[in-house]
Image (cartoon, rainbow, N blue to C red):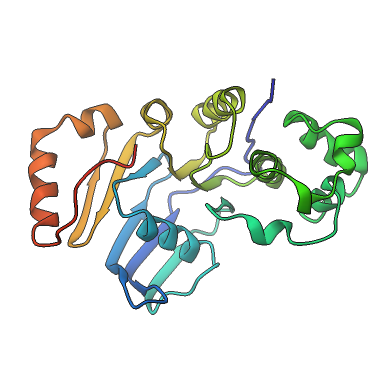
Length: 245
């Protein structure tokens, strides 16, 4: 069985992440984020839900420095260290490295046995660790990315659909690893139970504002006042409202 265990190298202080007045349009000119604001607290495990998948991915890309917003401010606290598992990880594997060489790029410790220890947690052992990363399957790439995230010792994990391509055993191990992780998690998932068991805060981005509640996912989707608010925020958009999961 895979073994996912995230250990933060340092504890997070009170200032985690501030996002102020973020604006971003995609290549086609579609407004994905408009005057978006967010304050993340040191005990937050936030699930981003809803149908605006591209808005969520854009936010994650911007706060991790992959994309640049048109305007707005992203401020990480001094005690924070963050690592990212994007929805599209293909750019990480467009090279001729084998799996061990690939992971060594992200390790302060360059000893092969140390790096292979993290690969072994995700069931890459023996000759498998010498496989070229460019030929890996989707599930193998996600397992490599999880090895990378474990290796960093970050105290904030940002994950865009981390369960995508994973088998049941890997999802279960990731689930347990995120529940026990002492740091901050910002994530999306298609898995209802995955969200319910991890998140203590739910955020839904809509075309006309956000819904932000300190609650479990089950309580969120069964709250009639939230259902009514969502209808108001989607009024006139012509979009069919459904949950991400």
